[in-house]
Image (cartoon, one colour):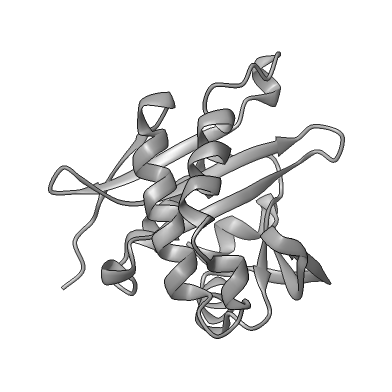
Length: 177
């Protein structure tokens, strides 16, 4: 039975936990898709640096502020989503959606995606996913994402892999619920 996680807005105090979960998620989800050197020994430190910067940077106007959503089960971080407004494009990038590997398939990702959609009611929400990450691709399609582009994703160490873009348009969301 799937339990509904509690979802809250995160901040700088969550950087270490988010970085560790991000590293764990990448190492698990991308194993066999991304070359091992891109997921190697420096991954955890690189993720710590990225999240420390992301969660303490001054983004200026409130319209530019990224939003970190934390999903918790029994007071523990079960997953997170990070939304980044693309002000010049009029849409919002769901830059990260990660669930603790032991909890995938339990509703945490769905709850985070639904919360992200609820918090961006008037803007298209989009994300990028590696083409080889078939589990995630299937999830986004089940959740109503429409494939809107194909391109290359860039990873640490110069690794370049094919990826898809999925989009949820504001007008199409009501029909899904």
